[in-house]
Figure 1 (tube, rainbow, N blue to C red):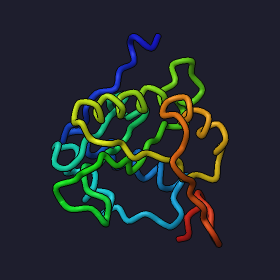
Figure 2: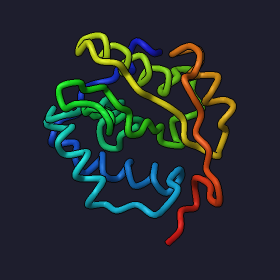
Figure 3: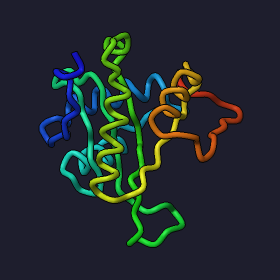
Figure 4: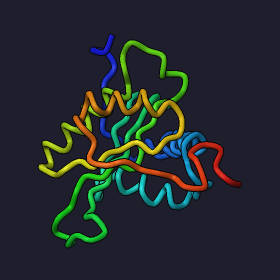
Length: 160
């Protein structure tokens, strides 16, 4: 079954479906409310392979997606970019599946990292099913290099 489900590189004509799934992801996982304009300012360039790339499973609707940006860390020079994951999300209708769409997106991100010869910075910022996500990421990426904490807040149910 996983032979028929592939991660493809997003294109500009995916923008509406990407915005829809990005807003769903923010509704489920964000710490604060989402700004659609800011989402679009990250998604649109990545769909055009401008300082980023989007991996997509499905078409319209999108079943799962990952947004990766190529940029330096805040402290690094501009000529030292990393591949930084902004979000990875699987639509709720496609989570209970033997295919493992999140795993496929992780594998795709590792392939992009190897191809671009850039370090991949990817993590989990979620208050929902965190342990299962950590197990998946440890299988995919090995031991973590740190941990996030949220004080006086949580992911999901973002403030209006």
